[in-house]
Image (tube, rainbow, N blue to C red):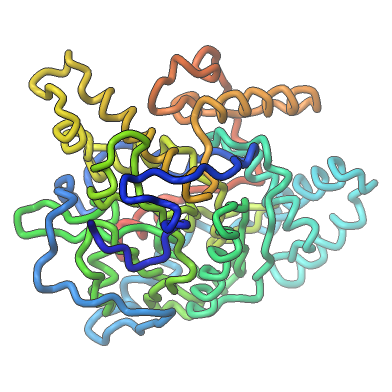
Length: 461
């Protein structure tokens, strides 16, 4: 049996055969959208992984605790990671910013029944004229973050948008404080396995003073170590960022397929630094199976909190580039995508072989059968660890409930069919049998192209 040095969700509940008592399920919550990514090669162009191979001698022991390293002198950070080189484009003109502010403030006052927004808009106009920007009140920030979730076309789990908890950390710009705040975010979101929908909002971009950036795609991701044979040990999606972190001084983990990456953070001072997440901030779940006792010995696991870290929260023309956000997992994100995609862990052939399936022809449906068992393993393991997870059938029904609620309030719900429909058993879910309009609204969580490049570990010129 493989060693699991990090905290795993109530692992003591598992017997050696993988069985355990079942905790009472939590009957509500947002399904995932964070891990539904387009298929493709790894971030650095490497081939898919062979997940159980070991890395070479270059990987050292993982650095414990929350520690940072300044960029080594040989790495020309000033030339390659300037904020002006990775900005989201030209700053809005004062007129454009005021128009966006007025639209948002009107929406806020209308939905929250706050009366005439004219006085607040006039105050924002004066602030923009004086400083080139304006500051949201705490109430505006909370409203904006929640509505941004409501407007997320790719998210199936929006029924609970109004329950999003918002941590206001807009005074934080330093890289180390961002890393510490991110670790605190994970602790609070984890909630002993009863995952909370949570966002932490760090400093916004301001004229001549960019906000901090988190380069990681999510706060918790697993390293992908490139091997001499062209393959990757771990998650190929993170091979580029893994390589960058090592160039910045991260010694690497122990060389397993599930080494937690450090956070790579760029503060307002432009310095790019890495920070190892503390053990108590990372909750992981060992994967077992309800029937196959040999499953636990495979050493599979996944982390509990899917906290997206590199999307910009845009509210009323203001960009918050570091605003990590999480709901909780829908099982298919892990079992049908992260562990199964050919450009990720690519486990279906391995699982099919262990199940004794005929993999010589696709007509045996070995991929489908292996995929179902892998997803059963995820749901079984999270349930028995007492960690919140939802399934795609339940979440599909909840999404239609969300549609009905919003339509009764006179709000059209935008949705991207290709993301809303689950990656397995799509036609067996009610969201499959209808069409949607991909309406783009603000506030919104926005994926800027340069953020995607940073997540691949590519320093921009």
